[in-house]
Length: 348
Image (cartoon, rainbow, N blue to C red):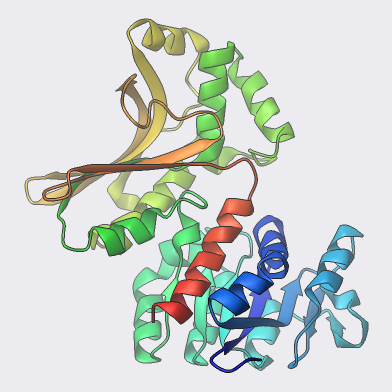
C-alpha cells in the first residue's frame, strides 16, 4: 500500500447479480481506485447460500468469480471457505471496515439483510446496501444506529438502479424545496408497457419477453402490482423529502389491467402511459401514489425507452431537474454501490 492510500477492508453479503458485478468492478477498477482515488479495497469476507469465505488479509476476487461461474458457492474457496455458516456469522466475526449488503429483498421481515446491517453498524462498520427492504422496514432505526456509532449508511442503489436519484435529491437539492417528485423507478413495468405500446405485444407476451431478457423476475408480482415502486417511493420520501412515510401512506395501482387498446388510445392522443411514483405537496403535506399515468409525449418520463428509468424533481429554486439511465444489466446498480463506497472515503 502506497503512502497516502486508505485501506478498505470490505465484506460482501450476497454474490448474485449485483454483488457479483460489484466484485467484477472492484477487480476491473483496482487501478483507478488505488492510483486515482487512494483506496486499497480488499475483500476480506464473502457470504452466499453455500456459506462463507473469510480471510483477514484478503480474498482473491478472481477466485470468487471463478467459483460462481462454475456454479459453486463461496464456501468452496479452499482453506478459507466455511460451508453452512450464515451471513450474520460473517458480519459478527470478520475484520472489516465496510459491509456491502446485496442479499435479495425480503419485504416481510427484512432478513437476513436487516440483521446484517444492524450488526455491522453496531460494530462500527460503514454500510452500503442495494437492498431496499431494510430501509423500508427500519429506516429510522438504522439511521439512528449509524449516527450513534459514527459511521455512514448509504443506499443510493436501492432506488432506480444506477441512477443517482437519492444522491441528487439529498446533495444537489439540499437547499431546495421539492414540491413535486415523479419517477419511473421500476424497470420491469416500464419495459412491459413500452414493448406493448411500441411493438404491439400483449401484456403476457411483453412479460415473457422481459423475463427472458432478465428484466423481470420469475414471479413479477411485486413489480407489476406496483409495490416495488411504492417501496422505492418510501425510501425517497424518507431520505430526500424528510417525510416518515410508510407503505400505508401510498395509494398503489399496478399495470396488470392495462391492455394494448388503452396504450393505443394514449398514443393517438399524444400521450404515453408509464407507471409513475409521485410525491406532491398539497396543503402542507405530501400525497403519495404509484399508478399508471398518462403523460404528455414531451414529458421527460414519457420519453424513456424500455430499458430506462428516470426521475424528475420540481423545486422552488432549482427549476425542474430530470435524470434518466439506460440499465440493460445490473452493472449500473453495482456501480452505484461502488459510488457510495468511494464517497464514504473521499467525501467523508
